[in-house]
Length: 272
Image (cartoon, rainbow, N blue to C red; front, side):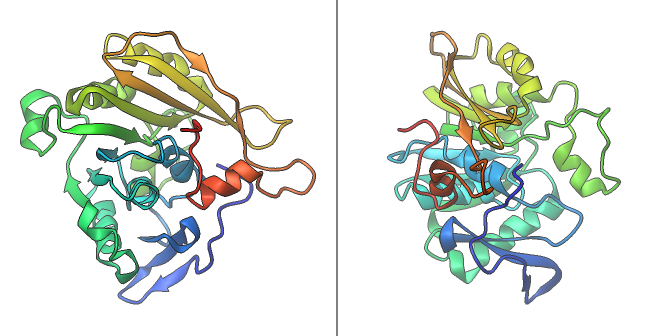
């Protein structure tokens, strides 16, 4: 997402048991990910910004839809010491990276609070429950969905394309599932391109209310490149627009103080 990626030290260190993977540190070493060196989706600033949509004092059960190697879920578990997290990933290849991340010694302190489910979050009704996503079983759902349009230039790599390119009904399918698995007044948060806002709000209608939006800009002089939308299951209320997150200082391309704090796992995007 950004011109400058988070640098926690030890990035791109080769995985000793998988030559096609790297072990990458996040949140200033608070957790690490085993993720594909090439081909699959590699986590970055999007994941950390989305995880920061969870309040710092959150103590319930969070579910990470489309978890990949687990960046969003691990970031929540690191920031919120009383939270439990379920990573949900449909790709067996990416789920294997999440499993390796769970087993990594540097994540030992988090392992008891983070679990993995291989399932397609777009399933509906009984099929979704049979896959392991029970109704009213979560307090927070996070999603970093594949939000590129199919007409956009797509990577030829099938694993990366699956993580980046959205189907026509993706927001409707994922938000329907989020509404089903959330308890009353549970929250959902997702990150996407600004152009997807109308589709997101349409899919939320009748399911979620009180939507809050934070636009994310590369710097103070550039248009937003992402939006983070957070809403509450079954709530009523108008859409509200929060102050934007600027990632970089214009003058020297350094992270802004808030972006730096989000990188370190020390701040909430919605200031709660």
